[in-house]
Image 1 (cartoon, rainbow, N blue to C red):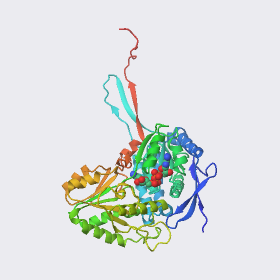
Image 2 (image 1 turned 30 degrees about the horizontal axis):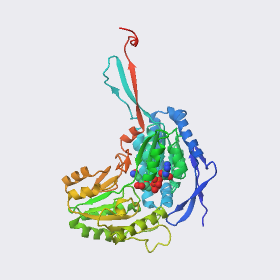
Image 3 (image 1 turned 60 degrees about the vertical axis):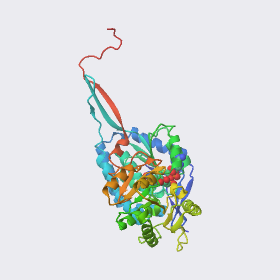
Image 4 (image 1 turned 30 degrees about the vertical axis):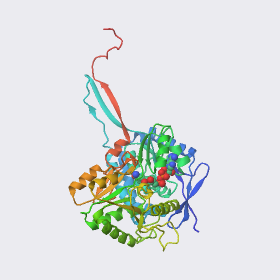
Length: 494
Ligand code: NAD
């Protein structure tokens, strides 16, 4: 057994252990072996991190730095993301099981996010108001909020960090990042890259540990002004409660159960590729996974057969191997939950079309086959609960009205896919679906320029795009009396 790699947290520009020396281990999902030791932050560690962020916001070089200079630092970071993309990608792959082909590409692509917000840093401005009073000049200035608590899950950590910190820092805030206890290493490696970019101490602090005490201490801390959370429903509910302690603004990027609506006029090859992309890439461990497949009845059998045939060809294996096309699930708990939910669906009348088990050739790690389950109705748990794995439930619909009704019959509303060659229908269905992102004849495309976020229980607030930077600022209104005369004595009797 190889020695564990020891990591430290990044607080106030220093690399530190937890104050009580406590730690936990991180496991490689491809082998099931422990590979890294991570500090378990206490509430006192979190308090130090938040105070460091608060000091950096209120005093020190960051607080007086010109927006253009903040942009220049973000550009340094953007270039370093490309330089270190192999190292960052490899770490994320070892820690989460996500394919190295994807993680190293994604780490390099994140450079575009930092460049985009670097460019916006000196373009956030207020307005001069055409006010309804004589001798008054009124204007707004946009100011940063203060300390941002950014809490992220284990999947796509570096991406989720970028969409939070790039706009937050461009706007002049400081940040305390909380990594997921299931995969903290990539975030700590990112901290080294961030340090190399030349930001002053305290601008970003990275704490590691469990939801409670680490996450709870952070999101209820009185010096936190804004909470940006990505994760599941239970933690989100706790965080909303925590924010009653500090009245911090909260944005939530939560789970999904996104429908893929396939009409019978589609280009069948495009639809098959879209379905594979939506549910089996990243082993289905994606908040936007297209996990509810809705197919028009006249082409149901034909399409399901083709998707199953392609799913059977997906090469499952070591995520570090460029020949692998699907890696393992990130945790053993995930694997067990998925096995149980698939079994429950079959017991309740669903038919297994493909997959539904651990692949025969794997003897270690937490692998699961790409799985297609044909379902008689949307009442089954497999159709209603987020699976966060390579499992798709398939159902038939007869017409546009039924397709929209089924698509919207979910507590979630993060994303949807609509596949049709009829442009009028594409627009009608897109409008009718209650989801934050609708992809037409494509899926899973993201960009720094395009807002990202959900409807309903998928959360609120938007990340990426122009508006995200305004979200990390607030307006201050300034009134200026331009009259040469003294203001009226409010108590003089007329
Ligand atoms: P999770 O909710 O269990 O954990 C997310 C983070 O919250 C972790 O860092 C965790 O330690 C922290 N946390 C837990 N309890 C907390 C508390 N009481 N106070 C403060 N912090 C707390 O989620 P997970 O299982 O790691 O990730 C999977 C979930 O994330 C899925 O539901 C997925 O859909 C969602 N997700 C959403 C998006 C999006 O952009 N909408 C993106 C990726 C993942």
